[in-house]
Length: 514
Image 1: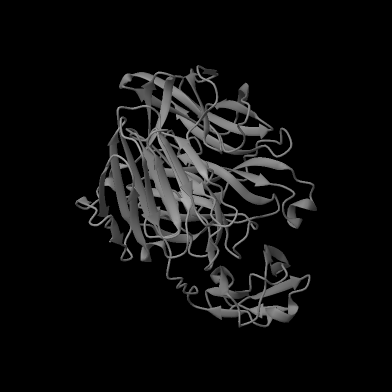
Image 2: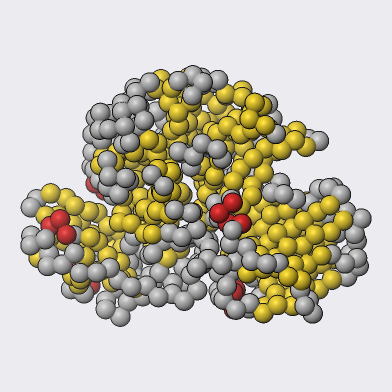
């Protein structure tokens, strides 16, 4: 089927329960896109769109393995489709449309935080991996940008990272933004024909991260199986760029480079239970003269140690930063000098509207000393704390939510006994004070109850951050963190506290995101 491009966007109807078909789009004999999509007719669940302005006035040929009957429902429009799902989160980032997973390419430059992310713009299930893009001045209010990277003959676009080329190694200017990503060869038909395997690639931007241009002169050859997820940063003490890369199983590699192009392997690491999405960052231990490095992986497992620019030496066993299983594939921002900020993908099942998945609240990371050794703390960044209104006590142990995010704060002494239940809609958070345990139950399908030990601090505090679709909670100054998915329109429900035994201090405030 041939379509003449008459407007900026090509709308394609999506019916999520339809059989998936594969579309191949060509113009003037050149392949433009390969799309797996659950095509519907005009009585569809929503429309996905493809920006086609660069082919204005030209013909696009659409070849399909079974979607011809619905391709007649394609529409050219001058604007993107509008999406009106009423219960989108207000604090947490969500894509305008489609499935998203890992945060990618996170960097701060020229006053803007850039968030790229794994994205399927054509459906609410995993596939068609692109890099989506959004920017923010405060990590709370986001502006959606056009797609940043699209699949090609080398594969779909898997995870990676971003960095500023401050030494102008690529000769595109000192402020050029450089991005490393995995080209996942074999995950689309386009690359299967060339027998391309998983390789590490590069893109760059000279317009502030808005346009990413694939750099054809760089390719890190395939090492093993699905090696992926390059995280790159500059190591000041040894004056070199460092790349940490996932290899296979529980194995990772560290590489060094002087010029962002030629990379030398310096170490292979193995950590039981850790896999994919590695990160490596330095944190102070009480003061900036005493620091440790943290080696991180996708499930929130981490190891504390030292790093000299060549090798990482572990000083701890494998530890866990998360009390629940929702958070995954967190990455830290580059370009921030005085703090380490992490964002994770929340593995939601929330495809009630036209999107699936959320990002966690940005968390500031730090290390603290404990009887067991150094431990990681996660706390909402300063920009989040500015959203907090005046805390007020619970009246009659119940509040009715009115559509705004809230923060609930409970505090108690370790000598307190009894149970305290916080009922939020159909979800329940239980404090067993005698056992010093936090027990979380939600009604979400396939969700598991979480039982979390709160430790033996003399004074304890639990902070619950409630947004549409998700609860994040922190205890004891961030040494305990977790997130759980909750029912639809939770901000239209009520919060009730049922208490037996000793009383605890109960406060709450609304969070102003406007």
